[in-house]
Amino acid sequence: MTSIEVLWNGWRANYVGAERVAGTSVFTQIFTSGLPDTDTHIVHRSNTCCAIMNAYPYAAGHLLVVPYREVPSLVELTDEEHTELWVTVRDGVRAVEKEYAPAGVNVGINMGAAAGGSIGEHLHVHVVPRWVGDSNFMTAVAGTRTIPEALDQSAGRLRRSWPRPS
Image (cartoon, rainbow, N blue to C red; front, top):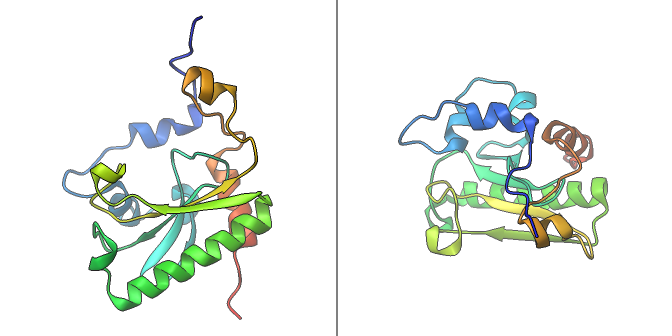
């Protein structure tokens, strides 16, 4: 059996080809880029953190909640950062549930390389909508995920569904 090792995703070319700054995380580079939120796929901003689309999503609507300050773990957050991080996670779950109506939602953090953290120097919380049977043949057979929606579409949907302050 032949497996697919490369799947063309032209919409990701800007991210993959972007210049990286040594010593800072990709999140810090995005936050300091001066680009509009629509270009960077930032969905929501608070004083100390934001919700941004995952550039490598597990499912359509996969959000990351990221403090602006580059810290590797929860214990290094200030009380304000900690509170806003979890309020933003909660609101992200609400937006994902309203917009995508998933059967469930995974919320998780990988702190450190041993925990599976790919950007270990900058804490981030995953909010991933899930459906029963949402792993498809591409994942099982080819080790590839197929996402039926571009990041700008997902970001727009979640911006529209983000909870408004009461």
